[in-house]
Figure (cartoon, rainbow, N blue to C red):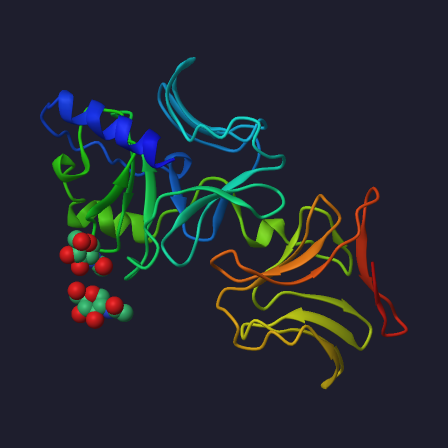
Length: 266
Ligand SMILES: *[C@@H]1O[C@H](CO)[C@@H](O)[C@H](O)[C@H]1NC(C)=O
Ligand SMILES: *[C@@H]1O[C@H](CO)[C@@H](O)[C@H](O)[C@H]1NC(C)=O
C-alpha cells in the first residue's frame, strides 16, 4: 500500500500545477468519521467516483478510467472502507483484516474529513483544515494542497456524510445478523435482557441491572465494536481493529439472538 501512495506522490510531484480551491462540500463527496463505504458504496463528484468495489478494491475513477486504487483487488470479501474516530481511514475485509490505511492514526485532534474534490484529488483534512493525506491524483502533493478556508471548514462541521453511518450497520431489533455491528452503546434487547456493547469496551448481558455474562474486555480498548462477520465468527474489535474476543463457528448463515429466557444464542 505504501507503494501505491509513493507512486501517486511521485506522479504528483512530477506535475506541479497551481492549487485550486476545489474542496467544495457536498454530501455526496464527503466521508465523515464513523461512516462507511460498504461494498458498492461511493463518494461522487462530477466525473469522479471513489468507490469501494465488491471485489475489495477501493478505486478512484474519472468516468470509467481508473486513476488510483488501493490495489486490494480480490484480497477479501465484504470489504469496507471507514474513516475511524481515531482519525485513521482503513480498508477492512469482512473478516476485519486491515488491508490498507491512510496512516493518519493518532493525528486526530478534532474531526477528520475525507473529500472527493472536484479536481479529482481525494484529500483527508484534519480538524483545522490542514491536508494530511491525499491520493495525489490531480498533480498536487500533500504539501501543495491548500488548507481549507474557514468557511469550508465551518460548512464541513455541519455537513452530512455520504455512505452508511455506523448506526446504519447496526440491526435495530433483537437479532444480530451477519455483517452487522453492535457499536459502542448499542444493544440487542429482549424483555428484561440487554446485550450491550458498552463504551468501556465490555460486552455485557444484563437482566435489568444485573450483569449475567461479559466478554471481560473492560477498558481494553476504545470505540470497541462487536460484529457478526460473514465468516460466522462473532468478534469484538477495538477501534483500532484488534480482536479481543471471538466465537468461531463457520457453517452457513448465523444469527445472534438474546432470547426471552436470558440466554444469548448464536
Ligand atoms: C492539523 O495538522 C497541522 C499540520 O500537521 C497541525 O499543525 C495542526 O495542529 C493540526 N490541527 C489539528 C486540529 O490537529
Ligand atoms: C489540539 O490542538 C490544539 C492546537 O494545536 C492544542 O492546543 C490542543 O491541546 C490539542 N488537543 C488535543 C486533544 O490534542
